[in-house]
Length: 238
Ligand SMILES: C[S@@+](CC[C@H](N)C(=O)[O-])C[C@H]1O[C@@H](n2cnc3c(N)ncnc32)[C@H](O)[C@@H]1O
Ligand SMILES: Nc1nc2[nH]cc(C(=O)O)c2c(=O)[nH]1
Ligand code: SF4
Ligand SMILES: [Mg+2]
Image 1: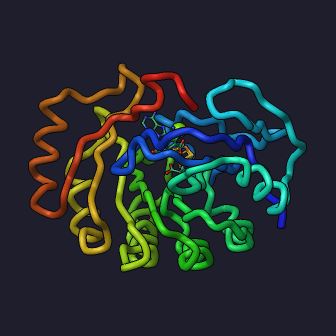
Image 2: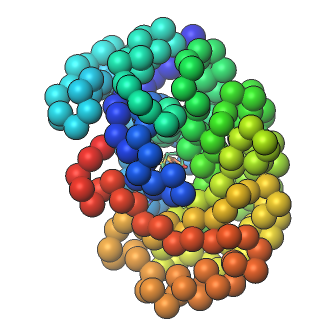
């Protein structure tokens, strides 16, 4: 199996409840959405950059697409990791590649949770699911109701079990509608271990602290709700 991958590196998880845990990251190229706040390049790159020594800022470049064997070889150079983060872009677009991967470290999926038929293909391989709910404007998604139905179905498929921790992250901007969040959390609260409200990184789109704290108070009626900003950007690591 082959997939376009933009980077492979070792860092610590900078978001959500596992913040600070040492991870290897595999960033798949391409996405089915275009969230207005997205901080990651969407296009398929010709090469994948591989930072063999963590934090060195020295990269080796490999031609895309990469084989599962090539990715497994890169990952085997990283020691003492908690898990391997599969991110992107949207990693579920490469569900067959993920299903084909054979590594001993636990797999941690970062997904936009919009493609339930692909979620089914990888369900049994995942130990951690960091599932986003994308509250995005009509310009970014054709049919919002159907988008949310598919999101709920993905959470049902990838829900927390005795072998898997599934939690939810929502990027909150000053345009995010609290009622939209409440409706979807009401539907998925039984599937997740917690909800993380992730304030958007762009300062001009940031909601005020009062808005976030009111939202947290409301959502705590449904599920354990934390407010955690991205931390990796603060200290300049990948
Ligand atoms: C780049 S995405 C890749 C995985 C998947 N496509 C998704 O959106 O979950 C990884 C994480 O970064 C978050 N993210 C992207 N842009 C952001 C921003 N400007 N501020 C805060 N979080 C952001 C996403 O919401 C997601 O939780
Ligand atoms: N350190 C670090 N933590 C992360 N958590 C989610 C990331 C992502 O882009 O998916 C990410 C990332 O790119 N770097
Ligand atoms: S789903 Fe993830 S990668 Fe795709 S545009 Fe949205 S934030 Fe970016
Ligand atoms: Mg990121």
